[in-house]
Amino acid sequence: MKAIAIISLIFGALSIFIPVGGIFLAMLCSVLAMISFRTEPTISGVTFGITILSTAFLSPMLFISEANSSSTVEPGEVYWFYVGFHLVFFGIAILWRLIRGPVPS
Image 1 (cartoon, rainbow, N blue to C red):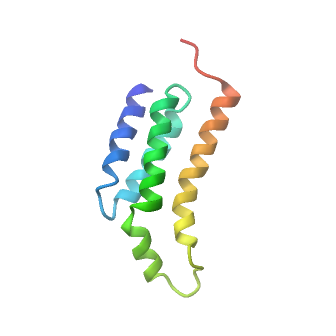
Image 2: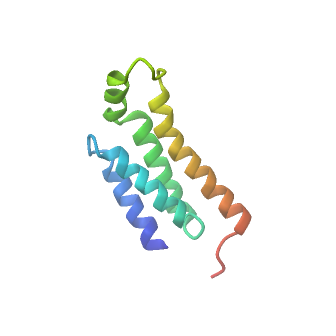
């Protein structure tokens, strides 16, 4: 699990610099961080922080998709979908760790 946590951290940091596909790479990193959160909460927590900040503040794709969205989409709906994705997976990871506890060494 440590390898998954490190891989998600590396690719999460790289997702900041990838213009369009970076948001999808950040989503994949959040899934990997959720999987490894029980055994490696520190590295996975840093990964969640990086992906949330990357998606919320540094992703040009969100601004492009908001500008090109049709009139049926409320303002901010696309933004909260992507940011909410990371927040929900972070919440699931925390609950899973609280319920199951840390893995015994």
